Length: 79
Picture 1 (spheres, rainbow, N blue to C red):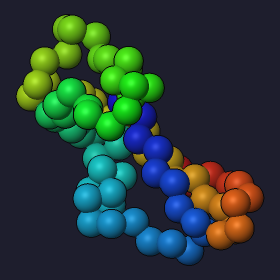
Picture 2 (cartoon, one colour; picture 1 turned 45 degrees about the vertical axis):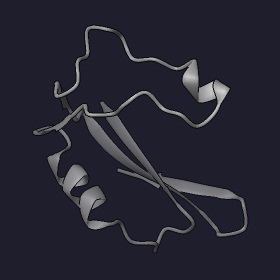
Picture 3 (cartoon, rainbow, N blue to C red; picture 1 turned 135 degrees about the vertical axis):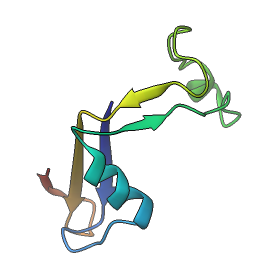
Picture 4 (cartoon, helix red, strand yellow; picture 1 turned 180 degrees about the vertical axis):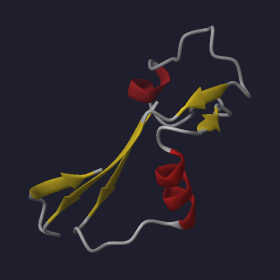
């Protein structure tokens, strides 16, 4: 899994959970526990492979923080 977190600016901090995921990149994993989304038709059509069952540990390969300038303009990415 590759985790990508987007922020308004480079100085916007990560949450505790995001920081933990960042620290586990390359050495840890997250457990798949999502349920079928009930948001809209576009999301309803996105499915993970059936081989990934609830509770499956998925290795975190990388964590990236994308950020902008706070005015809808992409500025950069940090790893």
